[in-house]
Amino acid sequence: MTDYSLIMNNLTEPKTPDTKEKPYHCDICGKSFSNCGNLTKHKRTHTGGKPYHCDVCGKSFSQNGHLTHQKHIHTGEKPYQCNIYGKLFPESAPLRSHKRVHTGEKPFHCDICDKSFASNSSLNSSQTLHTGEKPYQCDICGKLFPESAPLRSHKRVHTGEKPYHCYICGKSFSKSGVLSKHKRTHTGKKPHNCDIW
Image (cartoon, rainbow, N blue to C red; front, top):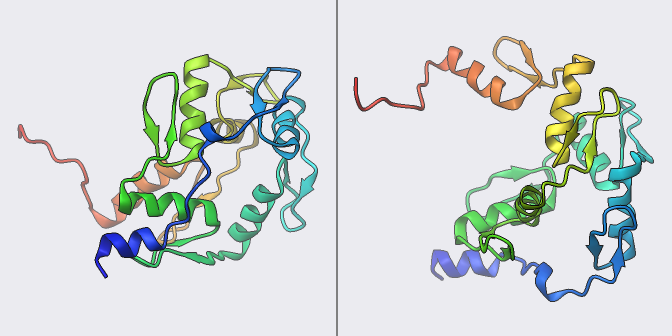
C-alpha cells in the first residue's frame, strides 16, 4: 500500500458545510446552523453563558468539548494519535485536521474569497474576517474579538494567568508563542536565517 493510500484510508471524510441545510438562525446576529445544538452553543458567544465547570481549576466553559479539552490539559492526556507519524492530540478534531497536512486536502471552502481550508475553524475565521463580525467580548473591559482564542489570550492581561511553562527553567508565559521564543534561549536554535549577512 502506498503512503498516499495509507493516509487516505485513515482519514474520516468530513461533512462539508456547503452541503448541509441551515434552518436554525441566531436571532441576535442572523448566523445560520444545521442543528439546534449548534445554535445553542453559538448563542452563548452573545450571552457569555458557561454552564460547564472544571472541578480541578474552577474554570467555566461554554461548550462541553472545551471542558474535556481542559481536563486533558490537567492530566496531560493525549489519547488521539496520528498513525502516520505518531503525533499525539488531546482531541479527535485536531487529529482529523492534522491528517489533512499529510494529504493536502482542504475540504472547507469560503464562498467570499474562494479560498479552501483544512479545518472548519479556519473557514470560520476567514468568514469572520470578511464580515468584520466580532462576537466575542471581554467581560472585564468590553473589548471585542472576531474569535475566541484571541479573547482568551487577552483575558490573561487582566487575570495575570500564565499557563505556558518552560519545562527547562520553570518560567511561565501568557502566550504559547512567547514560550516558544523563550525556549530558544536554552537550545540556541535560530529558526530564521538572514541571507544578507
